[in-house]
Each structure stands twice: as C-alpha cells, then as structure tokens.
Length: 378
Image (cartoon, rainbow, N blue to C red):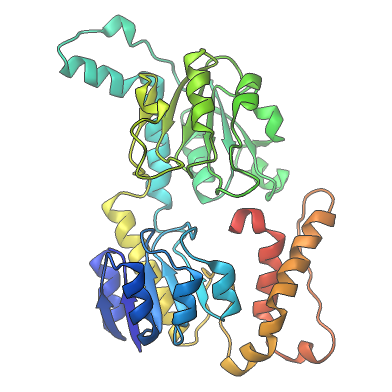
C-alpha cells in the first residue's frame, strides 16, 4: 500500500508509516497535481494546507483513509469522504497540552500587559506606572466549551484560585461540578466574567458568537481570549468594543482569514495581544499529532479499530457497499433527533430492525451520532 504525505509533518510519524508502507512526501502540491497523482494512494496525510475537495475525492479511487495531523478538519470535505467510504481521522490529543498552555500564557500576558511592557522597554521607555495589571486570583473566568482544551484551561485556572463558570451544551452539570466548574447558560456568563476564553469549533451556530450585542452585555472591562477558531469572535465588533472601553483587552491567536489581513483593526490596538496561530506550535505537539495520526492510519489499513475517526468506523468492503446508501439517512435522522430533543442528552440508544440489523452497523451508528452532534463535529 502507498501513503501520500502532502503537508509538512514531523519525521517521527513518517518513519512509523515507512516501516509498514511505501510513503511519498510531496508538499505544496497544486490542486491539479494532487488530483493527478491521488489515484495511486491508499492513504493521505494532511495538515491544514492541503484542501481535500470533492474533486480530489472523486479522483481518489483507491483512497481508504485521510489522516489530519491536528484537530480541525475544515479543509476536508468530510460528507463527500463519508459517501465514498473514506475514513477521515484526526489527532485530537496530540496538541491538547500545547493549546491549553498557550491559552493560559495569553491570558496571563493580557492580565499583566507583558507584550506591551516588553515592547516599550525595548524602545527605550520605562513606563512602569502605565503598565498596571490585574491579578488572576479571585477573578471569574468564563469558559465557552469544555472539551479537552477548555477543561485543561479550567484545571490550570483553578490552580490560580480563579472562579470558573462555563457553557457547554454537551456535558452535564454533574460532570462540570466534578471538575470544580459551575455550568451555566451562555447569557449568564457575560455579566459576571472578568475573562472569557473560547474553546469551540467554528460552525453555523458559533460563527460570530461574540459580537456587538454580546459585548454590550458583558461585565465592563472584560478581557477576551480566543485560541480556538477564527470567526467565532467578530473581529470588527471586538475592535470597536475595545476602542469604546467595553472590553479592556483581548488576546487573539486565530483569525477568520489566515494569514491575517494586516489591515485587520485588531492589529492596530495596543490593548490587543496577537500571535500567528501558535496554539499547537510546540515541538512536542507536532511530534504528538504526527505519531498519533500515523498510528491511526496504520490501524485502519490493517483493519483494526480506532477511536479518532470523525466520520465513520472501519468495516469490510462488502458490508460497506450494502449500507452505503443509508449514510445520508442516518445522519439526517441524528440531526432530526437533536432538534426534537428537550434538555440535555445523557445517553443515546440506536436500534436496528430488519435485514440491516444482521450487518455491521457501527458506521451507521456513527453517522447518526455525527448528525446528532453536528454542531461540534463540523
């Protein structure tokens, strides 16, 4: 079998793949060249640069699995891959610590004006009295999204004696309480939080989640941290809120357009700290995601189970052909279920009847769950 690595990934992951398969590393390919050569490969490894479009998938007649060395799969047409029986997997744990630590670092830098103080001192200015900061102890941190990174930030914030309130529609109050966190509705966070950090994917529901209206409802002098996804915070509205004094400052690692437009109003404000999407940029994280995705690809190609597929579970080819027509139906049923449900969902039961119940239905169950939880999986 052959594996194509089309984006730069750490050599440790490539070496794992080379022990099992023929591996070609071809980065920076034009889309036309990728379409031309992809029919030769059984697996594809990407980061965020390669766009795996419908046209690429149409040409990928042998492709069995796409591995994203990272978390977000925005650059992959996941629904089309699912229709074609191609497993899409990611590496959700490899960069968790890096992103968590970067968030905390940004929050601390924001609280103590560290980048501004550094720049002024390097520029020959001793502005000690103008760089007054705030302490973390006793402050309220609002966390939007309690996944791996959000909960990791909470753990570290609790160690600094902060009070934590959080919003996440996909966990229970008991789960949050066990972490020392008070789970509340989104609107309840705004008037009480001194700091708000986002750890949500960019979806139709979360796009521009923080905007002019929500900034107006926030505690005066709030500080915003976004190391999650660009577009979740409306950048123009945030800049205006900072200029008006509604928001004391912000620390932003991700932008709606990347590389960032250097005319972005956030870049012109001294109260806003910015970094060029460095959340996962540690040596350890890059090795971690590379190794994780390589191990998962090897498992898929050997027919072994994995836990990091974002669209389906692996199964035998003959079974796949039989159940393939049901993929869209299963996902739509999940989407319908979440819209009919009331309150929080603690468990999901899926029952099959008729001839299909005699087949391996893991993939259909995964499609149902994907539809049900679509707002956090897309």
